Image (cartoon, rainbow, N blue to C red; front, side, top):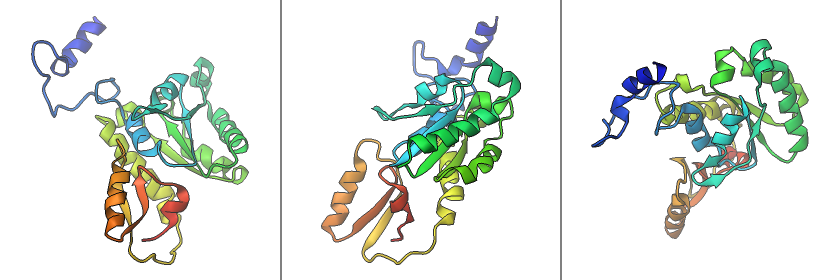
Length: 225
């Protein structure tokens, strides 16, 4: 009965004899060809150099989010299990952040994602991050992206960009302007486009400091064009 109801809800998204209806919002929390907000955030954040990615969720989410644009990225998980879901896992998350900071001491950033399960049980990852702030040497950024927070992975793009703006960009101090230089904003370097754009700009004497976020690092984002 549940399957029948689900098929009725998803009827216009399923290809049968023709093409499914376009521009129809997917149902939050139900997996479709448009992926989910978590995967949308991964699309934006995964390429940032020297960044750690910790998923506060069952291991499945980390497995799903490790492959972005046909490339495998290292991704960590708190591996929520039944006990964590019943009693809460704030301490588990805090210890995971501290442990990741110690093991990967050369990294600059830690992105902590809350997906469906963590959000459904009310895990406050921002509060947990504040509690361990003095125990880690990295910038730790919460990314709250449960599947029910948007209709497609595009909503995850916006959430990830807001996380960067709120927790990284606003904390930068003014630096000396670099002449004849630009930052490229909104370029995700899906299939190597950033390199092509960079080569073209260099031919006319313009230096690309940072391609945000397809080819960048924390130090590059700190620079000002």
